Image 1 (cartoon, rainbow, N blue to C red):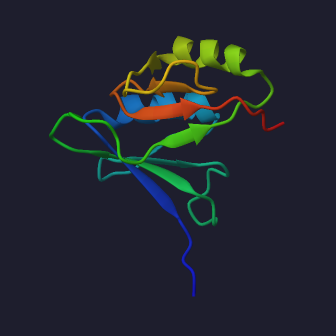
Image 2: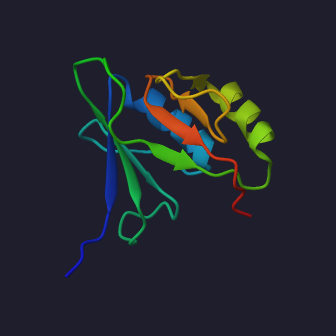
Length: 123
């Protein structure tokens, strides 16, 4: 029987800072747990079958390119408008050795975790 992807865990030096960034990016609400980590889902409810993003504290800094990353599609804006919004929230361009002229932008969150902004709108 197949499994269900329920959580994507993001290691962070400062989980509150990274969770706050992703909450702004996605329009979700970051929720603090007493154990020191943050989580969020589209519904905002932990019991739902939504995919959750979990932000956990780790002592070591990020040192190499991510092996797994998120791909984002703009909603309600074109790619360039969304790029400017993400940069305004604290994202930055990331160079992971990608070719010039790609149809997507490689960006990084405030702690350097790479993600891509795709061209295709999901309205």
